[in-house]
Length: 84
Image (cartoon, rainbow, N blue to C red; front, side):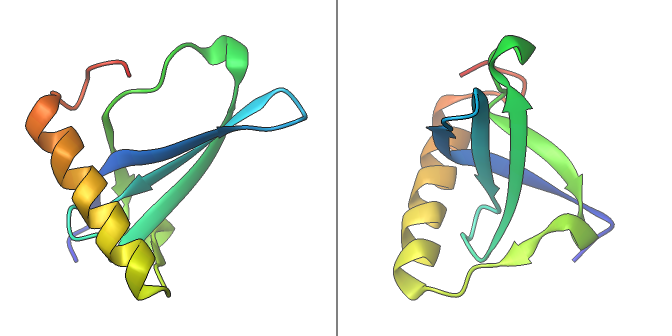
């Protein structure tokens, strides 16, 4: 892996504490980055660049496939800076 990786938004969930939990994944679905932010922070972008050290491996093969599919769809349909 390089120093930074582009990851694509693959899942979002609203918490009961007023936060937005975001999951971004590498295009192959093998690694994810989790991020929480305030609902007041604005809409998330389709992709972000993160430090490779901040990526976690995806353990479940079904999740790898699902995240990879969704990351590919997001990359095809959106520019990285698009708000989604």
